[in-house]
Image (cartoon, rainbow, N blue to C red; front, side, top):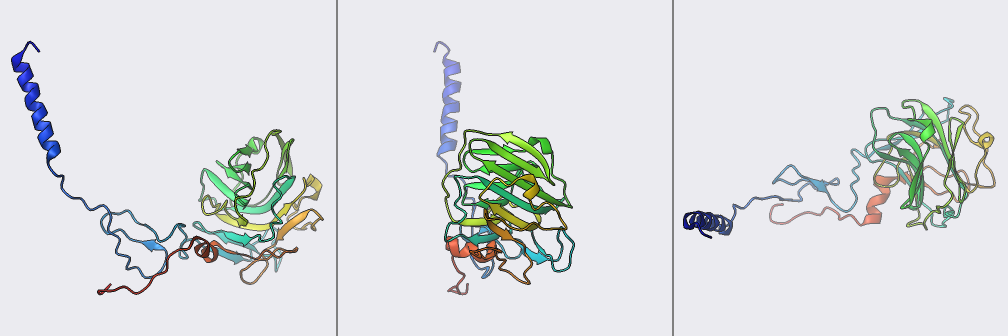
Amino acid sequence: MNNPKAFSKILSVAVMVATLLSRPASAVELFHFKFDEGSGGGITNTATTLSGFLGTVAVDPATDIVALEADSPSAQAGDGSFSNLGNGFLMATDTTRVLDITNGPITVEAWVKINGSFSKANEGIVAYGNSYKMGLKSGRQVFTLFGLADITNAAAGGIPADEWVHLAAAWTPGTGVDFYVNGNHNFVANTNLRARPIQHTYLSMGSEGVNNTLIGSYDRIRIHNAAIAAGDLDSDSANPKGTYASTIVSYNFNEAAFPSTNALSPTLPADTCVDILPSLTGRPLWVPGVSGD
């Protein structure tokens, strides 16, 4: 460099930066979990406002609620449904793998009353095995082949909230999906995709499993190993359809208490995720501490 003064200034700045970098930074406590809560799933970080959950799955009995209720599409005495809040949903264990029908065809149908004050980008209504699902995506009806595609009923627009709506999706491999909203039909061609093999044997209702719950009320959930025609769907609110030889599950949620059971065999008892998930994920248990904790 031909300018000694400029070089001297640059050297001085470099020495100053190196000195600052070499100084130890002031210690900042980012996390301090005392684990003194003693109950529930939440754990509190006293160092900052960031807190978390004990274990691998965030479910909390105080907020992730599923309840049986008297409301239903038919409004008839004795006809019930279930509702959910937070991340609450129902789970059934399919030990005999009767829902492993990934080769299709598959029809999923349900009566749903969406809570109008709640929405997410993706929401599950009925899902099985992390393989196939009927739900919503940005408020539109969707049939999901997990890991492969969301096949969307774009023609239906947003599904109305705060009223009972019958939704059905009939997927035929190599053809596409016939969507129905209150019996109104729309076909979406999708010829190349197949459902992937199941990743587990759990049926989720009100969610696609752990995340992406759809907050609302649910009734008359059915899954068929067939592409059910429009006239055979359970879309008449006052007059429930019977089941068919192809029907695998039919939940009516008329019990006085959980679990709810499949009207067919096997019964596939469905209970709340708060009751089931901790035993699956091995969440640690609270125990008395030492040294005054």
